Image 1 (cartoon, rainbow, N blue to C red):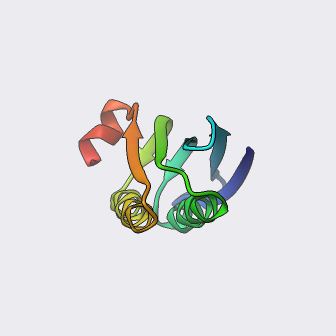
Image 2: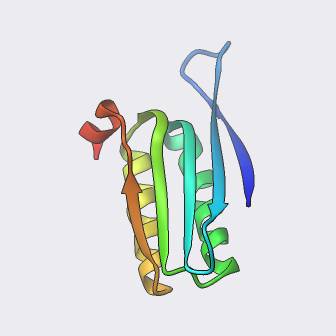
Image 3: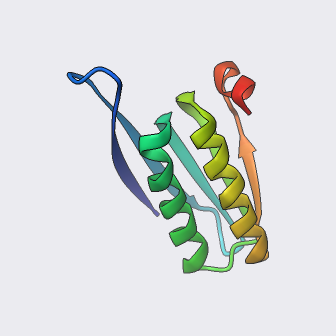
Length: 108
């Protein structure tokens, strides 16, 4: 369905982390969102906005958030996933987090 890129400033002024959100529509009832990069305070709102926009496009019953390519996530990332899950539930959709790397799994 699409790709969104969200630049995220890191602690070092000369570097920039980029979070990419890729969506794949798996039919009328299921969609997959693949996240790539880092989910921190500077990127979390972008993730939330992309997920909520997706949820409002079509009444999906299942939303899979694939974290396989997420290198880093802090409490801002956990918070946005919880908020997205709550919004999905309000719309009759189940949000499922898949494939977190060990470092991300520890945060979750």
